Length: 118
Image (cartoon, rainbow, N blue to C red; front, side, top):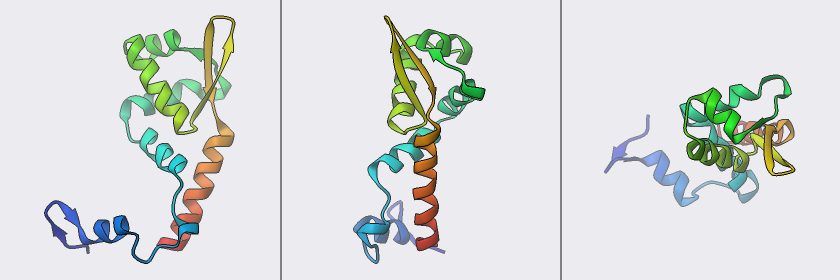
């Protein structure tokens, strides 16, 4: 069990300092963004809207998720940054859909990392 000092465990301090890590086994910034995108219950709820290849506009997402349009836009931006959704423009409308390739890449990197670290 990691010792906690000043709100930060020794395991966290050691990891943050890079002790014992090889640059080739560290998670990329993109995979950190992927993990961050998964952390929010609101984003998790939005992710479920893209079931079976659905393509939705920001307005559609806002309405179905029960959030404001600006909130939906912010959350979709974080999901896009985390490679969970991708977007395309159709005239004046931006449509979002699941980014299966991006998620697969992030999950493969995470799996490889976990095999090395744990």
